[in-house]
Length: 251
Image (cartoon, rainbow, N blue to C red; front, side, top):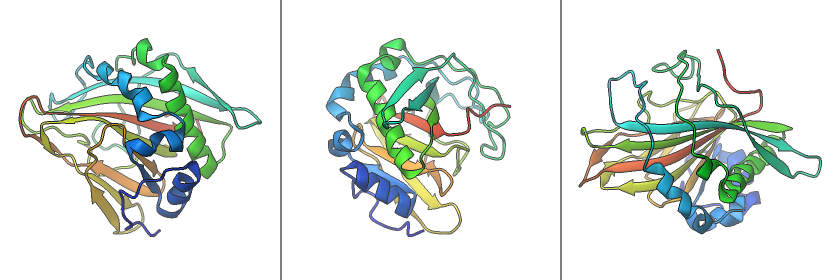
């Protein structure tokens, strides 16, 4: 894997994203290129940003922190023979990971409030999840994706906020998409992507709303460094989407 390339060299077309994922195990898409890469422009997604303001506090943080807020819902993307796909909202379920992938919170069934129907039934949301899934299916063809969607807010009201309290990790899925929604009055929050089988990696800070980082979960390990206040209120909002071919993770 030749991972130390310019991390912010955005991929503008689907073919470029697929090529970068195949070569490096990750691809960055800036907001201006999102429409060409996944089929929905950042301007169309902008109305969804307001739905990060009412996320319930995460009650499962085992480090005792009160800095994380989230919602979670599950979907299946079914592909037809012609390559078109359909996104199907699934009955609400717990989020679960084995301890082999999440040493801090693994083995625990975590029930979060579902994502608002105003978000999950939005045409822009539908096109975003399907567009990203279609990109991943060009890297690894599958009949369907099992998708978990996580709305996150990390704040600095109590000081330091930790986007990834479990540290550098993989998620136990096939692919991960991280989209930045909002970054406000903070320092830190550096994204780090490392070769899962070697010492090489890249570090950069996502600044632009609706920029996206796509990762092959089998090939790279990722983390985001803690954030610190640089004014009030300090927060970092993200959308994390995981795509898995072999069903949802469960005990």
